[in-house]
Length: 465
Image (cartoon, rainbow, N blue to C red; front, side, top):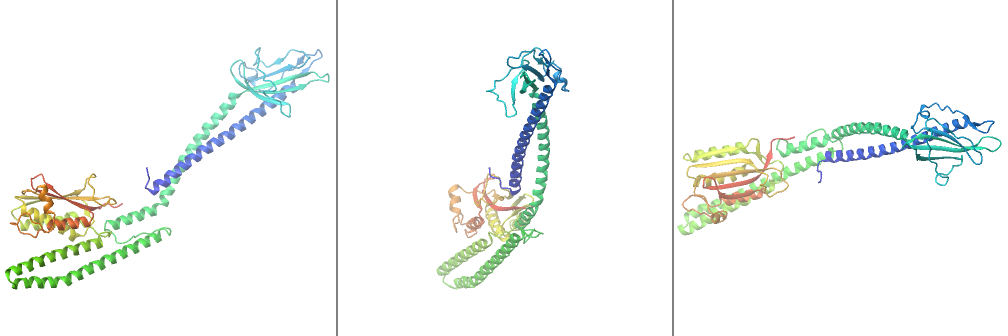
């Protein structure tokens, strides 16, 4: 899954790196300590071995004699794994000397091939004693007198001592590393959040612009972000100039066409009835077409602007209030979710909903309902990049339309009921404006049996981080 948050990415990478680094450091330090402990254990056995050597001699009768005092009670306690022993070598025979801890038990001896002597004529190896203890043996052979009589000296130590020492050290080390790692992650998180805070401020400033609460990026940004803020402000200013220029050109075009069309309409009144009606109808159609394309040009000029914003509730309340005055015999209901705003010009919203309300009031028997809410998650507009959409529904209790009639009604200038006043352009204008805003218009039969017009329009939220 792709992580889109920059803060989450940095935190994840630092967390993974810290975890891997601490694990590697813990293993390395534990291994170093183990080697150090093993060397210290071997040095202790060597020292004890030479203490035994210094304490043993050959008596006048050729017997081995001596009572090594190694200063460790474990050599006097049975089954501890700490032993010393002295055995005669070669043709020389004598009773071996052993520590009280070994008693009458025997200790395995590895061959020289399995554990050769080093250059100091010492060798170290690990065996298991008669009591199941793993012991490390320090062994050497020493000539005791001028007659060449020699003996084998061995001192053993329980390997469990080293293992316990290493295990206790590793537990303490890992506990300390975990505490250090957690503390480091907290400090890193705070540092990252503090370091990326200007980006969060820039995001909030952009959302305020998007929400129509500000016209430029405002804030004290660091020098790494300041060029970006300046470029965004320059882009917004350029966009504003383009929109204003497009609106001015649309206004100029509308003004230039207004007079010729008015002249044609006036002239149609003095012509013969058949010709006059033809000219009048064509002039009115041309006027509607021109107005429609001017609206499309104006919407296209400002559609991508981040400054377009209309509060839904006050705009819809004005429209419903006007419709109530014009249709005193009809009941109008209005329901708008709080904090609902649309990313479109107010006049476009009023023209779109106004056309739907006029159609609904024209065909309704008694009542018309207008509902505006956040669009459900399963309902989307055409533009996949926009996160917020608004569903605006206009419904009446009139006769409604069949599916084939709905398709026919969407055609420009098509009127299904010639007995009602109108030009037949209302629904097509609504559809064109909605499409220009990347939205959608859907017609169906409503709960009251009449026509249900559902608009999916780009929305905004008032809540800005």
